[in-house]
Length: 344
Image (cartoon, rainbow, N blue to C red):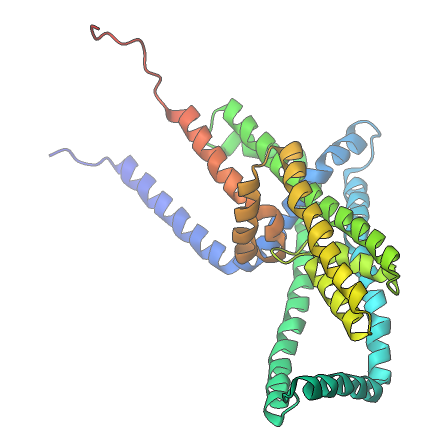
């Protein structure tokens, strides 16, 4: 009976220890996975400029990384700061005039109660709303804290990715267990998929916002800039998207005694703003990264469940990466059949 050599036993033991430690580290650090994915996304977008500033203009790498991180921070957070600034004034007004706001809401509800012969503001419903608010508010605050933590960790990781970018990529080529051409193919396609989703999603959202802004101006909506920002931000959300903006706006037009404008707003929203997303999203991602529409749809659904908001980008990448690895495996390990020697 052939014995297993000591070298094979030691190799198996080391691999088991590596797998065990890797599993423990992954379980403990999985909450930081969105931060790592976000850092890689920004690195794929900024690496070219990082290398240009270093090689062409001879800038210090720490200065280059700090400048690029600051610019990306401002570009990403500028719409959010604008939205918070707009919303804060409305929230402050609502708090200051809370009694009038409640009376107005009760008046609307009472009007529909009399019209449709039904009770809405019953003590039971009020208790349910209060309980829902008590459960939801801590979740919102927790999600806000987690988002801030993710952003801080993301930029912490991004700094070292930018500063040690060349070393990191050399390490990747040295340790990845693939042929050189397949390693290059993996990096090229992965960066292309990141670029396609990271650029395509905000660009489509901006396009939907512009189309919505035109409609808001035509209908004479008050504060169209505010609704433009709301449309751009909600357009990046999965499934419902910009409907989070134009559906409430249409309902507000109904409530303010303009049912004609409300109907036009809803028709324009679903027929025009929604079409921009359905048509141009697939076209743009196909054009930039050769991403099939089915990969985009199912990738967004999977990605949001796995990674949260960053899953909008990395969901489609995950499916594309799976298909790419199958292609690389076939290229790496398949045995080419020679000419057949069998008689015809």
